[in-house]
Amino acid sequence: MREPSLLPVFGKLGIKSPVVIAAAPTMSKSIKNSVPRMREVLSSHGGLALKLSVVVWTVLVLAAVFYITQA
Image: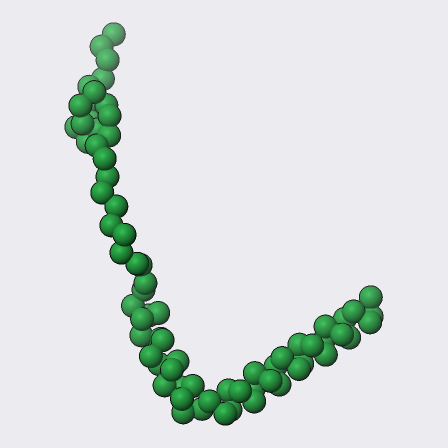
């Protein structure tokens, strides 16, 4: 029975050729566009964002305390 021939993509004697890897950062376009947009929103609504984050943090702490006391 005959051996199948090696595929041409594997190079000589079936050994793969070295692959060059580009070391460029991969960042999607939506992330690149969202960073300036978030900066703009925070600069115009910074006080409101701070107040909302304090309220959310307080609710999370109270919920954690309630959960621990119920256990």
